[in-house]
Amino acid sequence: MSYTKKSCQNQIIIYNNMKIKTISVFAILVLIAMTLFAQEKFSGQWTINTAKSDFGGAPAFTMPASINLNQKNDSLLVEFNGADRNGQAYTASARYKLDGTVVEKTTVEGGKLKASMKWTGDHKGFIKSQEYFSSSDAGKVYRSVNETWKVAPDGTLTIQQNTRIADKPESNYIIKAVYQKQ
Image (cartoon, rainbow, N blue to C red; front, side, top):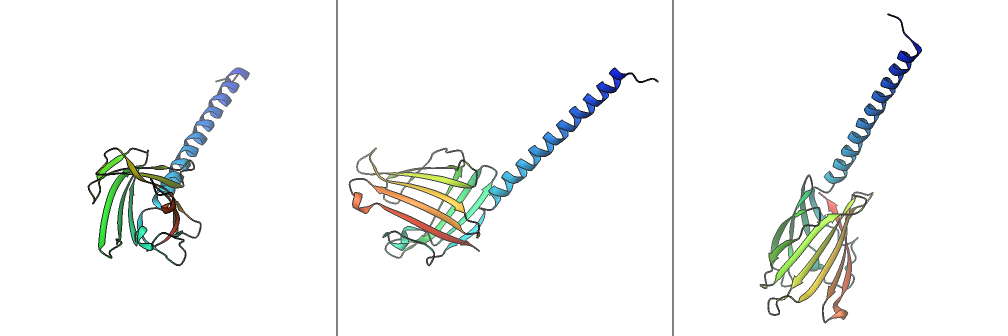
């Protein structure tokens, strides 16, 4: 079998194409692994560190004492445990799709809550949005809460919460809650 210059060039082209495909597949696998790693660091039991948190004038009960997160692919099950303003223990939970899909619930007061979570642009955190609707004045939003959740380099979960209360701007507050993974 004799090799011509043309057949050698074709072999080189085929080899280079296979090399490019192999590198491309490897790069895609690395990106998938990095995304899965970023997602997994949120799962677990988190407990508030009040010494590192700044409640911005809001009462400490505003943030839950602990949060249990269970992340599966592109959804997040969140369980909050804490005490209300009367010291009564509570547990609340919600499952969010991390694409911004809105979840609707009925509040303890009989009003409606619409909430959603989605990834931040860098996929290293979440943005949670909540609107609370009055039970007596249907359709009126009486409180809006926006949160950004990020895991810091020291391994703590930081939730930056910005709350706006309709008709009471003096009651608006910003909280930086810091949670330790247990």
